[in-house]
Amino acid sequence: MDRLRKDAKKIIEGAIEANMPEAALLSALEGHDFGGAVSLVAIGKAAWRMANSARENLGGRIKNGVVITKYDHAMGEIPGVEIIEAGHPLPDENSIRGTEKAVALAKSLGAGDELLFLISGGGSALFEMPLPGITLGDMININDQLLACGADIVEINMIRKRLSGVKAGRFAKLCAPARVFAVVLSDVIGNRLDSIASGPAAPDKSTSEEAMAIVRKYDLSLTDAMKEHIATETPKSIENVTTVITGSVDTLCRSAAEIARGLGYAPHILCAEMNCEAREAGRLAAAIARQADGGDYSFSRPCALIMGGETVVRLKGKGKGGRNQEFALAAARGIAGMDDTVIFSAGSDGSDGPTDAAGGFADGKTAEDLRAKGINIDEVLRNNDSHHALKAVDRLIITGPTGTNVNDIAVILCGASSPATARPRTADKGARPA
Image (cartoon, rainbow, N blue to C red; front, side):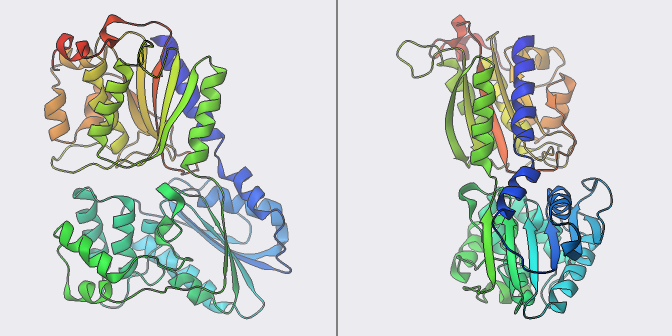
């Protein structure tokens, strides 16, 4: 089991390292001729590393710039660039202050100028300027509602972009007539440009009718001003932007597969569009692990079964946790007694919900260890308190802020042995509830 834990750590760290934004940014810059001096705006959890790499590559050609990133994600000064750290996953006063500086820079541009716009996950909260009649409190409230009801990232962004003066292509409009070269590090399944960071430089594909359907679906509580803005159509065409997507959950999964192969596991990427409730995904992962046993089944040990994407958590309790930790905890009972299996799930940005963990893992002893401490898995899941449960049994994944953000990765890591509990349907009978 120790070996599998070590291998899991190597896969997590290696896959994240392979998806750091520096190399991806340099690849995007190749072949693009800026002509003259360039202004820079970078937003998101990877904003500092992307901006620093751009400054090192373009040197003095960057005449001014603004970086807006999450607290503790800046790693020093960047010459000629102002750096603002702000709130995530909810916007705060610094989000607005930093955005106002970026907007002022955009409005100062004229014909012949060019803006290098670096976008990464987390930009929706970090890059914010409420429309008239909308307060910061309104923005936080609607974010709270959407996160609590289990809306996915596309649904969340479809609502909050309509309340913002810089999302849904509006920031690019503010830059006109200057040209915008946007480099995007994607944290959204399917790489939808209008959803990554809520699409500040992309035409909006969604309609007001679709947005109102989400309001009805989750019974969202809105002010009159919010209803008015949601009913107003967003920009459907942007003429002054060239966009390059460089890095996504697909590359994260492929990197994990290559590392797993080098460690002796047969890698299989099951999907890179995981988009469901975290606890259900964890239970499914455990079921797959039980049957990764050769014979009539598709996967033979040793193997690494890889999934990428972004699950959701429906907040019904008052505990502390995140989607990756809830995934791991939900998998624990299903692999109880399997001494050569580890299931882990982690966010590539190093943060999972409002915690200091990137995610969590479960192995064949996790359910037993939880039970020994008097922790009941079902009660913990009902209270959304996965963080404290996994911390109690030393099953958290701690990386610290990584400087990138290309969504989440989950891996079912199966060693060479084939435990009896892996046979179909026997694990549920043999494992007592924790």
